[in-house]
Image 1: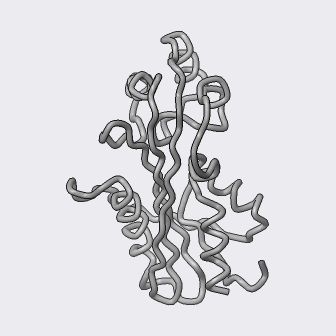
Image 2: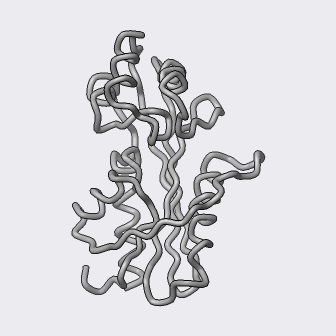
Length: 189
C-alpha cells in the first residue's frame, strides 16, 4: 500500500491500531480532544458518521498532505444507543441489556484528505446468548471494558463465550471496518 498518503490515526484505541498494523498500513497517532455530543434526532448510522466527521474537523486546518483517519463505534439495541460505560456498574448494566438479544454495531469513519471529507459507515448484527450475572461480573471486573462501546470487546472473553454469531464484518465490531477502509484508501492513492 505504498501509494496511499501517510496516515494519521486520530484514535487511542489499541484495537484500531492493531487492525491497521495487520493491514500493513503505516500510521502515526495524533490525538485531539473533541466533544462527542450529537443531535438527538440522528439515526445510529448518522450518529457514528457525525462524530467521526466532528473528530476529523479538529484537524482540517493543520493537515494537508496526510490522511486523517477518524472513527466512532456505537452499539444500538432496541433503538437505544450504548456508548462507552463510565463505571463497572454501568458496564454490567449494558451487558445485561445486550444479553439474549441481537444488537447492531455501527462504525462511522471519516478520511480527511486535502480538506475533503470521505465519510462511510458499516453495520454488523451481533447475536448474544443469554449471559449469567456471574459471567457479566467476571468479565467487567477482570477486563474493565470502560473503553469499549457497549461495554464489550468481541475479541475478548465475553465475545468468545457469549456471541453466538454475527451478520456482517467482524472487524467492524472490533472497531474499524477494514474491508471498506481498504477500498476507500485505494481511491485516495
